[in-house]
Length: 257
Image (cartoon, rainbow, N blue to C red; front, top):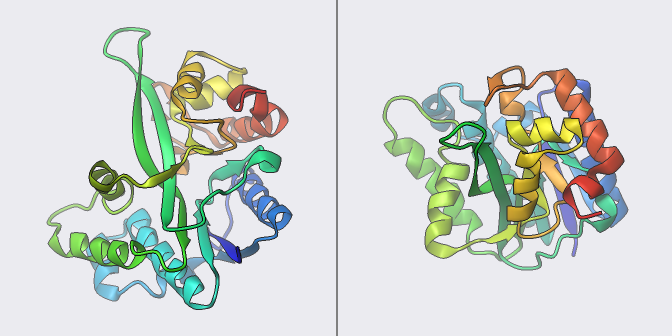
């Protein structure tokens, strides 16, 4: 299929580990024969001014709509498939990361591991994520999703949660309609980030057990970078170490060897 892979990040660049992530996606796209597009702040240009005002500076909320409008633009240009990947997605197993989505749409399959209710216990939650979003020409969902994002923002009062039209909206819709999910693109929680850096651990083991298939790429949750969550300080240094560890031995850690 004639496919475009597209990403966006702030034009002033970012830490080295973000560049590793972007390079990994660009290399994967080239190896698969896909076109690649990178956009900076122009991702916000097609988003209506009222929507940006209502989002009140929540960049994820504005980007969630911007990526959908770009997907529709690319499909209108003649691409048969548009594939969005967040800038903090690292493709560590590109040779075995295919994309078996030839109709409709698809999103990511997240296994989020966090502390349980008792000391040293863990709990895993399964969610839909949009760190990967795939739209095939002729799909019936993209226009609805664009309209739904704007409808949600029109109705919301007070503060706007950063995931309101991303994982929160998709999760609610998935419970009703059941999207096709891409288990190859996972999500690292703070506890699994720490385990990857350590070469393994119980949180990572739980994520692998609960995943619906081998994981070939992961989102590194840049929204938490520089913060402490679940007792893990997500410094740029730690995230860089995790990228290097995944590129060196990610197949063993997450894909079953």
